[in-house]
Amino acid sequence: MSQTCTTSSAAPRGAPPVKGRGTTWAIEHRFAGWRASEFDDGWHPPEPAPTDEREGEGESAESVATVVREERVRSILTGNDSPDIGFELSINPYRGCEHGCSYCYARPTHSYLNLSPGLDFETRIVAKVNAAERLREALAAPGYMPLRLNIGSATDAYQPVERRLRITRALIEVLAESRHAFSIITKSSLVERDLDLLAPLAAERLVAAYVSITTLDAELARRLEPRAAAPHRRLRTLEALARSGVPVGVSVSPVIPFLNEPELERILTAARDAGASRAFSIVLRLPWEVNPVFQRWLDQHVPERAARIMARVREMRGGRDNDPRFGTRMTGQGVWAQLLRQRFEKACRRLGLARERIELDLSRFVPPPRDARQRCLF
Image: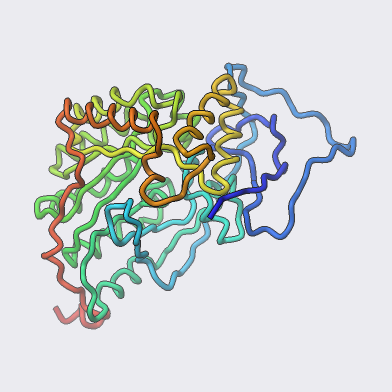
């Protein structure tokens, strides 16, 4: 199925970036029944000049507030049948992500909420406040069998609102009680808060963590992933996890040609030195509305490289901006994708970074009591 996305002119092409946001564009989602277009009626004043004169970036003095909506969900476990992903079940405590990564492949999921995959994705966050309750029910259900489970595969489970709501921590408490193995992937140093839970689980091979490091360049990270932890802070998180005995890997994802791609070997080296024992990498994916959002980001931040970057992306995607097919969507195809894989694999061999996932022990699972009254009896 081909993917197309009609872009909206809700935010003018030349509108400056806003500090702390990956995009200012409230792009219409693909299910919208109407489309907006730009029209100058003579009533609007010209755009104000950027307040920041650094090359490639102007930051508006106007900030955009984050709104968190609490939601009680019917279920929390999501099944996965993709052969490209190394787990069968996932948990995402939040919808949307305040980290604001311009390339995030999960942005189109906001369309199902009738919200924009652009600005709304990073400013309109849905918190699944009864997630732990629903997880306990799922694990206690008759016939439940433990499978490989990941937390944070779509939106970061340790994004800023987690400091207050502690939904992810509550989920880990349920998994710990049930001795259910799981993995976590995050860009946030907040995972260190839960080391009191994670370290004992790691000793029983019940947890593994992966830290996503896209670049070591703090300035690029601030533009590309504006509210995620800084690169040096993520390396310290790797160190803290490894020092506590938690098996930890690094995700160098996404690899973006001519942007963070030249850093590939340096990122892997820094992660290994910080304590990572595993590594994986995914090339840039641009499904649905992510494509125009990311291309606008390129135009705003690296206009001199935008055309070159997209030309190489298309070279790896069979001439298209995105290839959603299983088997190639994570790795790309063609000569350049092969060279990229060779570089990655050679660096991992040299650094002693394993390519296979961290194996966890699913045999320790014990179903939790089916209701609160039962728990009080023990």
